[in-house]
Image 1 (cartoon, protein in one colour):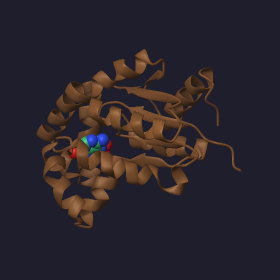
Image 2: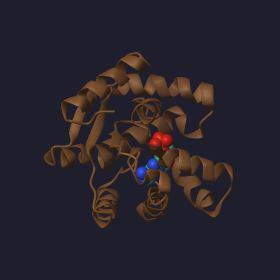
Image 3: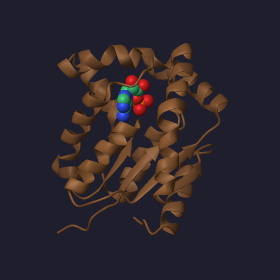
Image 4: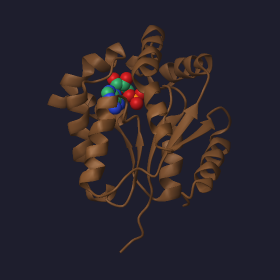
Length: 197
Ligand code: AMP
């Protein structure tokens, strides 16, 4: 049997570099990076029923309803590649999603190993997202939508950091710097709480 990899999640404002770091950490730990945003974007592009339901919320910079998001993550986490660890990027985003994830993990006799908080200044993330809008043409990277996504993050997602801090799971990392530098910071912080590749 292959040794179990860690169960991790990345949390931080839009534009903090979660997606980029998720790719790096996924390689380092040999676990799949699971991004609900990527799964939604794929469904929107394919015009699936889920994509058609999610699109208006995404374009407005709002969270997709919890019921849709929770069903999607259950399906994804039940795929075989997630059985021995995973890295969640962009999920959970609300307290309802935390409850859903808790129930899922408890039902599989497991739990999260650590929560990586990527810390980034709002002005820096806005300018990063403006750049990404030009490079990738993401419709939700328009400036007013970006501001709204930051508000949604502050209102609905930032409180989850306190919740996971109370559980002793959070490692906070300065997300500003070269990609490999930030990855190194995360790897050392994780090693210091016993999570090693
Ligand atoms: P992201 O790529 O993580 O920035 O997500 C892009 C968009 O997808 C978000 O602005 C939401 O509309 C939607 N989305 C992604 N993950 C979630 C989630 N966990 N809950 C609700 N909506 C989500």
